[in-house]
Length: 207
Image (cartoon, rainbow, N blue to C red; front, side, top):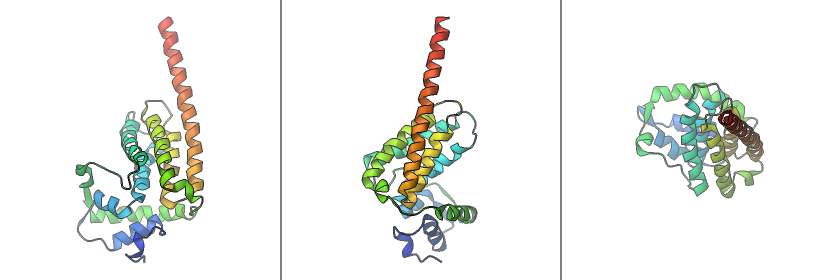
């Protein structure tokens, strides 16, 4: 089992960090603010992941906007160079029962460990402090695309943010680059669809 001292180092996996926290957790409830403080800089990657993942599956109309706006807030803070994400106090105080937290970890940790086997620290300059500001700007563009009501255009920007978030969590620059390239495709699709919609509206107006 991971020792509590080790979980605060930068070299451990995210799964180890969460597991070590759960082992030493005290109290009957787990607050979001506590998790953000525990994960430190990694909390940006984790929150990006949490808000982007749902957009990889079909959602009711308007859902992408609900997830896109918090992503935009987080990305703006990355661009500004904040070391920890700022969230409203009422949200940081939100908590879940300890039993629910343990159950969630039991389901998600095996999957997270499988993903981590493929990830490793490489091209770490792509995940450093300066790079993080640039990534914040690029993810902000993707969050805007995600929030727009463009049919069938949610998946590419969401995948871009998910890959970048995973790369940030595990300091894997290769994954960050892959996500950024997918972001170019995402932006191209959005511009093409947007141009087509504008042209269609102009034709309707001239009819």
